[in-house]
Image (cartoon, rainbow, N blue to C red):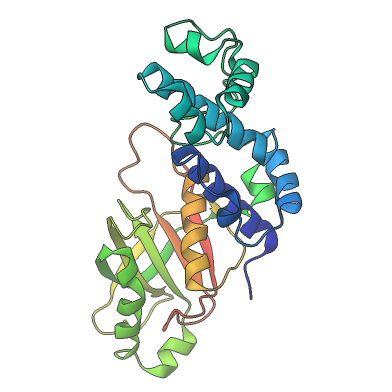
Length: 284
């Protein structure tokens, strides 16, 4: 089962916005993951409130404004912003900010305030004018406490597939087939980057009786969860988690001390080449 087009659109949208905010001069065709400009632009305009290339143009001009104030030459700033001539840059800059770049560089204020509902140069996150439940193919669930039997894992996120493969050699085949398996992320376990350590528990839903050797019982607290559609493919799985985190994990302030989330697999997840899983993230 491949990632649904709507999900891939959304993952791509977040990647494009992040890339433009961090590198306004990037080649947009390189970050569209094969989508045609016209097709993706319609989706982008609905989500962001402006066309993709207008968004990129505006972010480039906002970065240019910051660089002018830092003392860079107008000609250099114009080239970095993608304008072939200072004259073309001056026309675009004046249209966006209501003041010539030379005057702005000397301290003249912009005559047009930034729209606070839109993403701007320097933002860490983009305000998306979409409903994640509707647009990301997710659903809201109320779950009771879930009893699981699991082993603890702490380390690099990218090591989880290898851990699952190692685990598979220790579990009888019939146990792998008869249980519903899951990975539960907790504490700092919402991170999906190889640069971060994470905490997780790897195991199966426990319905009583015999515990597999080395496994301990734990409880996933019930409550409100958002759950994604079933996805497959390890790369897409990681991208979906990253996108999910941007949508649902608090954007500021302290994170709850225990923020459980879990993947629920349709089959034992080794060797992780084809992952069929549903993402569940608890809402506080």
